[in-house]
Image (cartoon, rainbow, N blue to C red; front, side):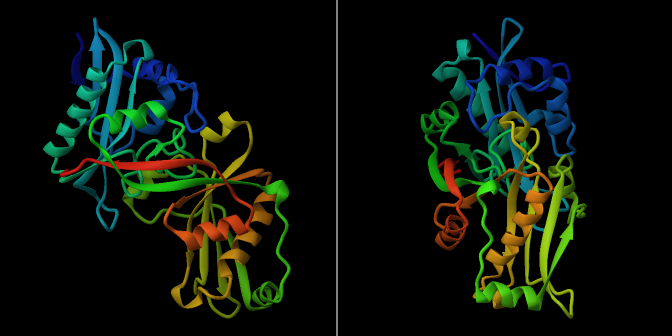
Length: 318
């Protein structure tokens, strides 16, 4: 038999052991230490010990599930109306359908007790307050296809697919800048702005991105500071170290609505790629919603290839 309880301050070493006993997969940092989990999960202001459900047998931790929430619209507080089970792991030798189901059920009960009306499986923005850099890649895109155990856990407990995202890679050594009339015109008309120490927008992002090294690139008209296009990259650490290659995660690509037929995105990304390559970055990763055909076509045109897929699950009826 096993017992379920909430997190205690003495748990991190045993939780790290459970984490390190998971099957190796592309999108999971291994090994982790209790100090790393403390830095990137347990010490965050948004961490609630009641939401970390721990299963123990004979006083040994054999599994855990972590439920958490997203931010209010202004990022100033936590929004409890939606919640997600963001992580679920067990020791391979202790994994049973009953253990998985009970961990997930306890996590759901916690989320509902705080006010959640909609329950998800897997983290995805805005339900992405934990595990950036430890799981997934440049974004949290639910549960990776390569993570079969967690996928099976949600599927076997009645969760349905809510959305999918493609995980795409590009090797910068293969990048060749586009040469066209449009690109030359944009170079004359715009300025390429670089910011290697951008500020965060709100309290939520300060918690979520506290450990990330970020860079922001913008295009502005030569005569004003109006943002025509913007993109952010970050270092995907410590996951990139596990891959053994310096990697930048591409996120938050934005083009002003009135400017979207001028190929600003391609030009901005091209200039950013050249800058990152000069700074030693060798690999780029982007996550793209599977139904966002324009974005998929943009990245494919820049020689990105799919390496994995993420799935966000949803509990029917909340």
